[in-house]
Image 1: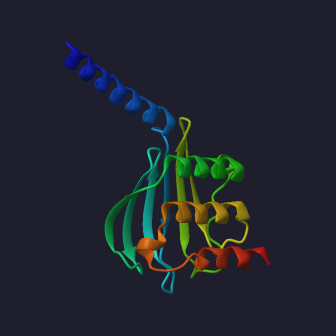
Image 2: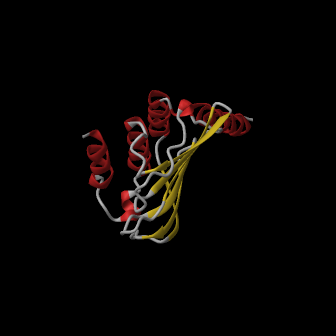
Length: 166
């Protein structure tokens, strides 16, 4: 009988932990960043972060790791990214598409959060995009740790921000 109580207690603890994990994660959050090539060697890839911390990578060109890979981030990092999305005002942003310059890369950010979905297309030749969009794109890269697959340092992202800040 004591053994049965221990088994039941163990099952209850395991289920409780699973429920707690589900509650502190964000099961309906999906954050995706696609970066395109340019006329140079801009890395082309897609990274998707789910609310449970799962990260999915698909490297295309000019990246160290071409193909698919997975990793995991902490739920706290998902929470940090959600705050960055809200602080940037992402859901009120427009698309920032073609300009006369044609050799820059694209970034496409798609986010599902709190039952709302939005995609913003951002051509880097368009200087009308708000700095908050550049910063959000960099934050997604940073939190997903895309450097492990791209094979570059974070300076690339920050260089774009410095260029448009001038």
